[in-house]
Length: 245
Image (cartoon, rainbow, N blue to C red):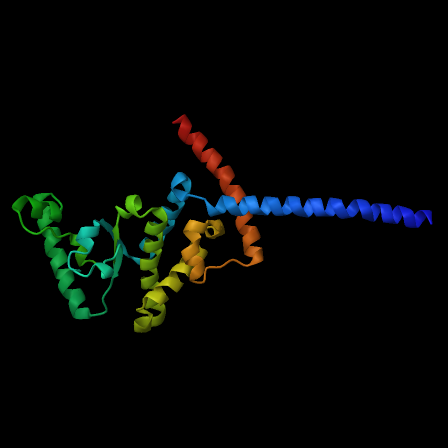
């Protein structure tokens, strides 16, 4: 009888303690989720540096020329406001067109060498329509740098990966990959493959990519949280070194 009483007493004590631990665990989970929900990458220079390095490496590996351009310049030939873009991927499979733009680019380089100035600067000086030599390079990505300030970094980097997605969709699927949906799927794959997994924990940054297939299973989520803890340590060292400069 005494043993039964002891067991019942232990159970009576364990139940509220267990419930308390469950509530405490749930509270921690909610706080973590809220932290990532409001996470703003613009407040983390080290994260921005990591994204820029990844994008630069991918473009160098794929031999893609990237140049920044104003929103108005990018959309100067698009009268329909609903079709205006904030980034654009350009490529060609036409050998004759490649040959023609290659000859134009060669002429531009000769002119730049002769006068010692960038071609678009020379255009401004002589009062003709400004043309950037990058427009004669393929494949290329044109990005609106002012989007960083007006549309936010998440929008800017989301567009950047989307345009890269066009490149990889074309490589993988050919003409069938020439759709926005295919580019979105490839962009999601790129983010999950090249960036640390914790980027997909950030709601504002990861939402669009998760919608296009870049989801994390429970093992990957655990790994992502562990990676983020290491990032916080790296961030502390990064900020400490910058403050000493």
